Amino acid sequence: MPAEEQKRLYEQLATAVFELDEQLAKLLAQEVLDRGYDAWQAVERGLLEGVNRAGKLFDEEEYFVPELLIAADAMYAGLAILRPHIKTHHTGFNRRVVIGVVQGDTHDIGKNLVRIMLEVAGFEVHDLGRDVPPQKFVDTAIAVKADLIALSTLMTTTMERMGEVVSILEAEKVRNRFKVIVGGSPLSQQFSDRIGADGYAPKAAQAVELAKRLVGLSNAA
Amino acid sequence: MDRRERFFRALARREVDRAPVICTGGSMTATPEEVVALSGYALPEAHDDAAAMAGLALAAARITGFESVGVPLCVTVEAEVFGAEIDMGDARTEARIVREPHKSIAEVALIPVEDLLRRGRVQVSVEAVRLLAQNAGDLPIIANLIGPVSIAAAVVEPTAFLRELRTKPSETAALSAHATDFLIAWARQLIAAGADAIAIHEDTTTPALVGPRTFEQAVVPHLQRLVAAIHEAGGRALLHMCGALGRSADSVARLGVDAYIPDASLSVAELREALPGTALIGNISTFLLHQGEPRGIAKLAARLAGEGGFDALSPTCGMSSITPLENIRAMTSATHAFLAQESSNV
Image 1 (cartoon, rainbow over the protein chains, first blue to last red):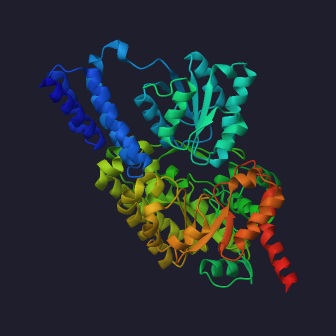
Image 2 (cartoon, rainbow over the protein chains, first blue to last red; image 1 turned 90 degrees about the vertical axis):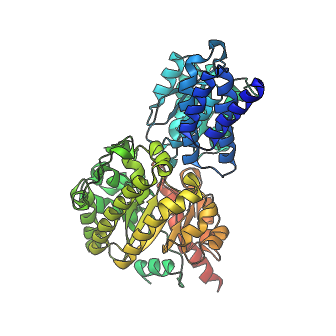
Image 3 (cartoon, chains in turn blue, green; image 1 turned 45 degrees about the vertical axis):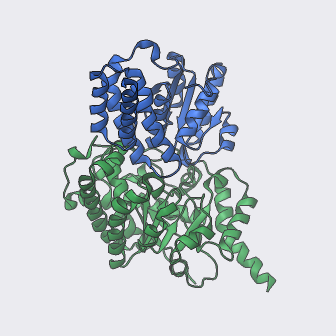
């Protein structure tokens, strides 16, 4: 029953990612190719499923940041093997995000988690890194024709930089071209409202839901 | 009761006439722009000059009414001596790490502690404490350190380091232990120079971020050793971390710190239950300090300092550099006003 075997292999791949076993994820990804199974299905039902399960445990506070990062490493390792064999029409849904940590702050762990979860969800992510000047978010978003700008900060002292990004978008009369979302432990929905952002999410997984909703892809995978 | 005695009594959870209002410095900045402007000193210059560092810390206490002085005024001394590239910022922007020296724990070579103690601004901070001991009168002197494992996460790029806490536990433990050795040696110098208390700021590897298992295995042993060494040298130990304690409350309770400084999301009732033997310092929201009105701030401060409240008051995190001085003064004068009101009721 090849269909059964195929399903079992995808499930093993998901489990390898979920159980943080990068070596096993690589071996299984290679096995998918060796057996001639569909690479995209292995990504979707195996690798991405595994990271999503890890993300769920993260939300339930069973997994924490180290576990989620290692699960993502296992996913990316498998993806590197499978990606060359994915037929092009499967790649994402053509929505672009510019993401970064605002100027004055170099704490980027939270931003990295959101980037991973956005990539898993199929967004094309342009990561500007950390300590990013407000103008650079705007320039990059215009240059790559982004749908969404995602701003992160951990520090109470740098939150106001987020409002500057919105102000620049308004000054350059491009505010309506982009949705702006904000995140980071000191933030709140009220803060997001006050600076004129389009949304706030308290956790990485919720940031992905928010991003999908804002670009009109709610419930889409 | 002078200010040092009040601070010590609050830490010991003994009776005080009123709760002291302190601000440690370090990650919990006492020097917003308006304070710096009135101080006669400048940032970033005061980060790198003992007389200016001590002078600004002392001026900040005088201007704001905080009943403590704290140095260093930033969170980058440790990362700098371990090789990170630092941007010193200015009065508006805090000093910060621009680049960590290593991409992986595998690249890290341990630098002898004696060399680390001579590097960067370590001796500047020790000298600043010495100057404060001469000039700060009855103000308690707090020296600020980053927690050992958070330092390790500034030596290796932090996202990589967090993975390696799990995938390379013995290598990361060796670096954390080395950072602890450095902190112990530095803390001894700071206490010998006149620091009354050492505030440890665990800014990356918190229970909320790494989870209870990793916190217990990879963070607690180093913090325990540091706290014991601070006590042995005659200092008090304070600990500040962001985020909830969750299932790590027992681990934190076992660290033996004199006082815990939580973030604003935690209530005094749950903290008392989680950390029964520990003094609690908090919990005036830095948002409120930045955007609130003096009246509301004074009310909150009086409430938190009252019955069943905190043992000492403090901003709950680093104050934004544009926090109005008027709001800070509303906080620091509130307990005096509260006391006055109490005695007028008698």
